[in-house]
Image (cartoon, rainbow over all chains, first blue to last red; front, side):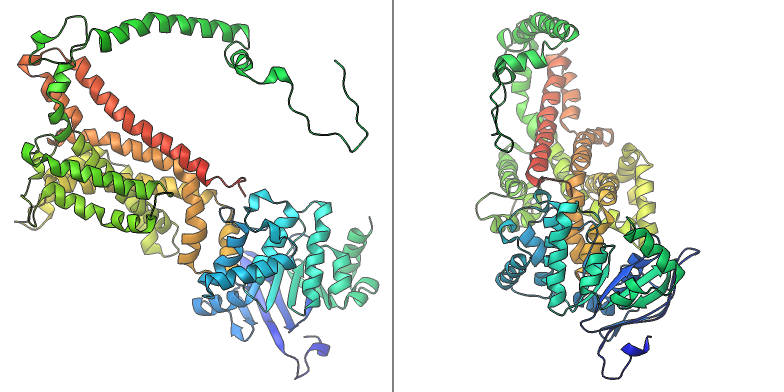
Length: 254
Length: 367
C-alpha cells in the first residue's frame, strides 16, 4: 500500500490484499490491493466495465472473490455465513437503482432490518428511522410507498435505510447515475453531509465535483486494475498515467 | 370556442370538457364509436332479443319446481323439480342424513376460517388466523368422526361436499408446497435442486387421471401389506402434489420477474436468506404470481371432477348417476346446467377475489 497510509497507529477499516476475481474465464479484478482507514472517503472512478462496482460489491460479498483476502472491520470474508452476516451488518450499501422494497412503506423500508437483524424494538427503530429521514429531509414521506416518490427522494430514502443499521462503512454504487440532473444535487448534498460526519465511505461515481469536495483519495480503475490512487488535488491536476489523463480529458472535456 | 388566456406560470388546472363525461359519452365511445362497432352492437342486441325470452321462459316461467317424477313436469319448461328432489344428494352425497349437521357445521366453520385468511379487515384477525390454522383438523374430525363422534366412512362422501373437500385441501396445501418447490428449484444445493426439478417435471409429465389410478390401485402395492390407506386420503395427496408442481412453476415465474437488486438490497442490509425470502422476495413474487396461482386453483378445483374415474361421486358423478334414474329420464340438460352453475359460481368467485387482491396489493408503481 501507499506508504503514507501504513503507519502503525492507523486504524484500518477495510483491507484488500492481492484480490482476484473471475466471471467464468473473464478476469474482472486483477490483483487488487487497497487499505482504507477509518473515516476515509474514497471515490472510485473509471470507464464502464473497469470493475469498480464489482470491487465494492466484493466488500459486502454481493460478489464472491476467488483469490486473496478481504478483511472488513477485522472480519475476514470467507464462505463462512456468520462472517458474511457480520460484515453486512456493519456495511451499508446504496445502489444505482435504489432497490427500495416497493411493497413496503418508506418507514417500513427503514425499520425492517433494524428490527429483524439488530433486534431493535419496533418503537425505537421507528424513532431512529424518522431521525434519519429527517436527516435526508423527507420525514413527511414516511408513510408513502417508494413508487410514489421521485428518483431523488427514493435515493435519499435508500441512504436513510442503510444508515438506520448504523453502519461503520457506507458503499455507494453510482448513486446518482440513474437520476435526473435536477435530483442529483439533493442526493450529493446528502452524501456530503454524511461525509462531514466522519463515516468511512467508498463511492463509485462520475461526479468529479463531489470527488474534489469530499474525497481523501481518488482511485482510478481500468480493465480490472487499480491504475492510480491519489489525493483529489494530485489526481486531477497531476495525473501520473496516460490512461488516467485520457479518462480525465474525456469526462472533464465537455 | 373562446379560450381564456393566462399569464405564463399561472394556468390553473381545469375540469375536462363537458362532452367527454357521462352516460351518453360512454355509450358513444364504447358501443357506437364506429360503423362496424354500431353494427356489432345492434346485431348483439337482436340476438339477445331472440335468445333471452325463450331461455327465461324455459328456466323460470314454464319451469316446474315441485314434483316426484318426470310426469309432474310441464313439457315446455325446465324440470327443476328433479334438482329440488335430489338436492341433498347433490350436496352431501351419501352422507347419513341424521349426521348432515356435521357437514353444515364444518362448512360454516370453513367460511369463518376462510374469511380470516382472505380478508384482512376482519375483527380479531390474529385469533381468527390461529383458528384457521387448526381448522383442517376440526373439519376432518367433524366430517369423518371418531373421538366421540360417530365415524362416517369417506366412501359415503360425495356431491358438492366432496368437491369442496378436494378443492380446499388441494388449494390450502399446494400453495406452501409449491413455494417450497419453487425455492428448492433455485437452491445452490444440487440434491435439493434436482429433487425439486425431478418432482416437478415428473408430476407435470403425467396426466392427473393416471395419478388418480395410481392412488386408487397401485399405492397399495408399494405400501407395506396390511396398511389400509383411505381412498379419499390418497386422492387428496395426489391432487395436492399435482397442483403443487404447477404452483411451483407459476411461483418460479414470479421469482424470476423480480429485479436482482431486491435480493441484493435485502442481503446488504444483513437479512439472512429466510428473512429476505419472507419479507422481501416472496411477498413480491407471490403478488406477481396471483393470476397464475388463481388460475392453478381454478384448474385444480375443476379437475376434482376427475375423481369420478375411480368411483368417487362428485356433483358431476352424482348428476350422471341421477340422469340414469328411470323415474326421471331425459333430464341431462337440467342436471348438467345445475353442475355448471355450481362450478361457475365457485370459480368466478375465485377470479373476482384475485382481482380484489391484486388491487389491494398495488402500491402505486412497479418499482
